[in-house]
Length: 182
Length: 195
Image (cartoon, each protein chain N blue to C red):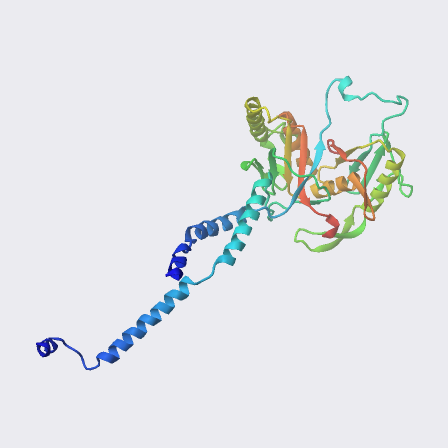
């Protein structure tokens, strides 16, 4: 008698509707789930406005603003600081950092030999400039019309922070894109 | 009397055999039924419930949802800034899409000259500007009703990695004319050096 009553007290829970719901929801959510983790880079365009807004008051009015500019061309990267080109000693007429021989992914995803940007050299020059201008955080990036977006993102990454071992150092996080190089 | 009654009942010759068979069948059926009802789905339910919670969480938190394809290969970046809910401009290999609404066609990384003000050399893409002005207006209306929402003129740009700089500047200029002057370039989080 006791046994019978205990059996009646715990009826089987009908899980079928819950299972149906879950089995429908899971494929739905799986298909809409993020496939990759997305990050963003904040970029500004040059502001056009009255001089009082555009020009910040400077502590040292005699000193020219740095106006660090990286111009990407088919031949390499030209670096400007204080409106002056940082010259390449080996080739004064060429870009500051000429392209070097390396490997690159082609349209089919295969690695092929190609002329690539010398990112290590760029990093070296930017670290050097940053050490001389600690407070500076702006960089202007410009490129020839046919330069691919991928390279621009990579240049932004390099100018934003430098890595020394495990230590990360912020360099020029404020990116401004300007009109193309003619 | 009792003998008379007996005569009315029909008992087949193989009565016992038949009954035995029937009983056996009934027992087999009972065993089968019990097997089905005894299937333990508790562990399966546990897994599914955990999965459901995990998927719901990842579904709710991401404002920009991009599925890379051959049409839209996104470059990698070392940045770790999370995307925000803004107007999104997606530039794939063959089209420009604003907030999941196709706007115009791109061919070989170029917008047709007839779609631009000033022809081939123009920067102002007319249909894109129209859509962006409408998007800005919508955001501004929303900001007027809801004080927690502000129109800050930010647009998220999702671009194929082969997009030429010229098209990028054209889109930025056109967006600038629609009062979008701050941009967030979306890319896949991860070190490009990792491949």
